[in-house]
Length: 131
Figure 1 (cartoon, helix red, strand yellow):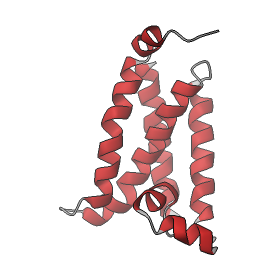
Figure 2 (figure 1 turned 60 degrees about the vertical axis):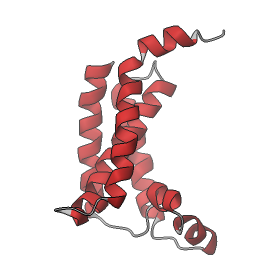
Figure 3 (figure 1 turned 90 degrees about the vertical axis):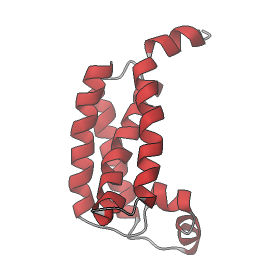
């Protein structure tokens, strides 16, 4: 069954707008160098990362319940965090690029899990409002 793009955009306009806003904000956290730059670079990005993927997955799985989407994103994000303990040459090559470092990170930190929880909770609230 073909998707009516106009109808799809209309139905999901607030989620699409949130994604359009969060992407540059998330990328900006990686280059920000003002007050509290260390926290913004390393922690706020983790919160926004979970929110972005939750919003994107909610577009792709529109019929799924928000809590299922957010739980899946949280688990994948935690798996990616643990993947940072693995340093084969091909992963180091990927991580040496801006996009690779942004998507996969460079170093494992237990504290990142707290930021993923914050992102997951924020995602639940945001999806409740936007859906």
